[in-house]
Image 1 (tube, helix red, strand yellow):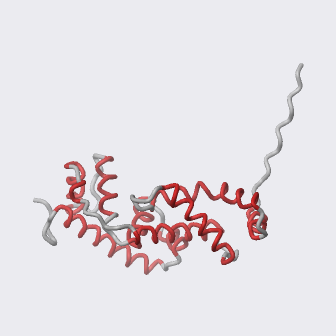
Image 2: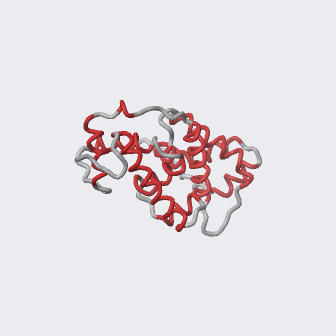
Image 3: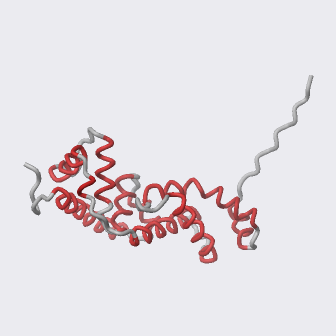
Length: 205
């Protein structure tokens, strides 16, 4: 009977040792850190990148920022490395959003998407009967908002994160986030009116 070679035991990832190795300039540790962080970074970039920037390019930019700013990271109780990295990622995405040129988007609205945008003006939380139209409407409307508002509403509404989580990721207080989210939602409705050419304060009748 043929003997099989025993499987090699999996080596657990030690973040502290990995970061120390990266700071010493060890390429293997840098590669290990990228592999460890890639899923989270890719997920955040996918949710917050500008439409005009390729996903892979922005992920690479995040890792460049990570290695450039790693000396600034200091372990703190209750704030894991992942939260610090998420903040770096969101800042890179915000910078990219600010640099993105504003483009006219009204012509891109399909009849289904326009109907869904219209429903936002009559009901702040409409029933989503057409998922594709809803997704298109969200992308079109968010593109009309400032970078800070777009990131905040994506975290709160699309990713359904709590205020506590968003506060930890952004470094803003819950009170500031509540006020900003309220104003961002008002801007979202204003954007919907502009796209549909509705007068201020009126919805489709």
